[in-house]
Image 1: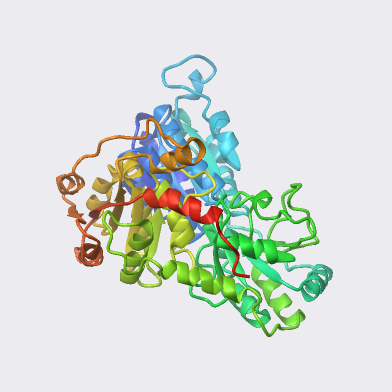
Image 2 (image 1 turned 90 degrees about the horizontal axis):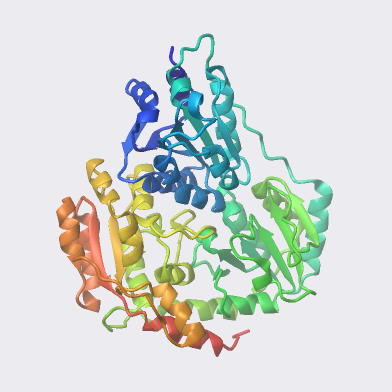
Length: 544
């Protein structure tokens, strides 16, 4: 059989459901082999969208999402989404065609060194130079992509290798490592440190979600009465309405959650990755102890020196500590939790127009179920989503944070709907981020998918304006024009809605969620709230 057929069989062996990509001359043999495969190829409109789809698929399933491009520009278009997956710890396998090995040693049309290009943003990057090694390459790529910390594997498949004949080769048996049990002596050390602490708190990271340890975290916090803060990427690790929830940590400015870090004498970092929220922003007190609980040892950093590190299965570690530590009777941070709840409610009845960010998020929460999914694109709106969106279940708020790449919103919503067709999916995006990959609306319509794109419209790069105003007191080069988003949506065959008053948002969202297709909602936003929030946080007084 052809090597391309063997390659596809190896992908099938790995349980691949979808490949997101664009056909090209140098991946013709792979495309032909997919015709007889149960793997569904999703033809996208830009390779960046394909990589973002694989990224979000990987985050929601824990299985590597797969994206495919051809050589040269097809491969380089994958890079932004691949880098996002790499820094957000999403398992992805990116595949690119390449020119014949007979011309890789010299200057040649569309030839660039893809392996070295992808190596800095991949855990494993390799070129298939012999057809017989395909089973080993594919097996390693998927194994490495899934292992902690998850990330991207990149495979380059030259066109002459894909077309070559290969005999006596078959996919390899799936063998993935099991996370070890935490060492007993480390559990005892950690339990002793927690016992001594007066005001312990948890900082939960995305590793809690990846390891499926959210129930164990809930039980640990509830029995020991320890409050929990979450990183942007761990939203929903415990419900935002939980009495022990301290909300989300991640803003560089002083915030209510910063009061918790200031008063705490012990931070228990669980499944935490410092790329999510660097310790120099929260570990300012040298007398504050830190416990690291994760499936890998802690990163070396001057601001992250540990009292104890416990490496092993996160759920097992939390269950063991729950039994070892004496339960507490009071939540020392209860006033802080109450203040955060009150702040979230503050704009529930606001009727200002354009709508304030707080009001948009409040109304959106009212129309979605706990299990429905929100995908946040990147921009000023992301800061509001990260800070104020009340995630009620794990993996229901997907935020690009480690790489913070604009344009993930629409392709991310498409992938989320493929993974969870039974749930409502809403992408919250700025007008700038929306226009970066809005072409994937056509892809979604072709697939018969239905989700809502909620555009926060201000005709500016709002986050950059926020930074410019805060730093210089003036802004520059942040304005642009937009199409009529309602007519733009309708030109694809989607539904378009425009919000003209605050009281319209909930009924518009309800109709959009029920329309049975892609719906684009144009919602003007009042970003004067950005600087007002900056001023408010600067004058913040801790309630504890």
